Length: 571
Image (cartoon, rainbow, N blue to C red; front, side, top):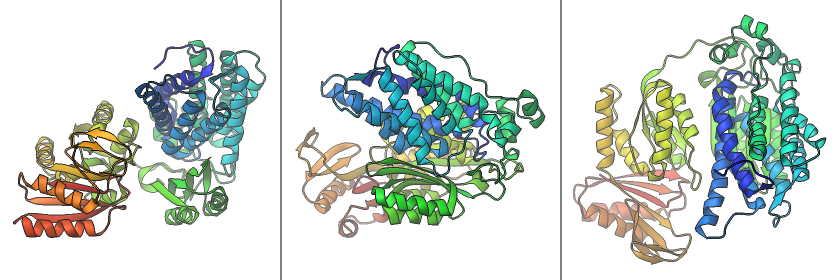
């Protein structure tokens, strides 16, 4: 990460800000989770903000790495700002994360207005903060004061009255946000009863504090989260640990604020990315507004992030299907996974002894793994999960012992970081370095929760290691490979991660790959077909195995939108 302070708001400042914001949210995550009592006391606002910021930072880093690889120097401000906004949009989690994504998008629209500009000054930052606050408010169906929206507006107002460079403007925005945050308990009764400030607003103050540090090199003063010590002490929520425990009993009633679920509130949180036209999204907003509350729809230019709390999760997803193409769908049941604002604390659920958490590349495999009892994390092509998302999945598995299957060689370090974080929380985690979903299938097939943990991990590791893996995909560009030069549009057959076959026909390439794999022997062939693969591929491969390789069985699964046309495993 670049050194601070930065003089102007350029691409390097965007990169620095994203890194510092991620660090600030990481430090404050548990504290923010603990004071999360509105609109749903599910204790995940800090985590959701962190995951959103992590996705934004990763997208910006990717832009810098691409420019370094091509020797084109530093990216333009517009490129970095757009990457930040896009990364936040596709990685947004929860109500707070979705709003943060829109705030960053609003800033990017101003910063990237002139694609050739290398940097902007204090005036540009003032305009960006104003547009961010306004666009975030417009994205929320029923804005409520005393929330992150109030804090964002106060930051923009304070920045608007500041004269000077980016550091001066950033500091004014931070102080305005800090003052507004302290006032949130007087605007929302649920916060006043809990004796805390708004969790989403606290997260935004952390992000703005990182902006100050970007331009001045100074870390702003700490932000108090307990607004009324006496009320907080009476409620048993003085410290973060007891805050999280007591959150379920500190809900707002329906008549206190427009989006508060209150007693008998919606049972599900539904989030998905949506590819759709503006006109279709306008109709979608109306439809979802009638289905539930806490509706936030952010994005634009054909890509949107939709967040809503509903009782009928299926209807919310169907509405997205009618509007366009929804994907990366996440449905959380407040009744079983979170403390919903029902006005009564629910007894803690006893953790299971052991669970499996797996990263999977498509909806079909997610269903297969889930049927086998695994907690899944869906990974889209080009959108690998962050370590925070894996940690969240480990927590969601709610077990004393967890076996983690990354199913991707590139996720090894990410998964290791997640495992280490989970261990600090008292969870025993074993990481099996699976490099493909077919290796994960093999490991899951021999998983026996009744065995001793170490024995189970050894057996699963052995099964995964004994499974060779391959994939058939289409080349996106000309490149050098171990099998020669490929052109864009060529069909590639990769065995154990390396290109082994270059062809023009999907079926013939898949047959060549399978023959090479079975030349070393095998007892079981696993085929996972992606949505783009012709149906005849699996049929041809099954026939080839049956006719040419005696005593070898074949099993076929549908992987959905998994990126590769075909995944192959040979055990």
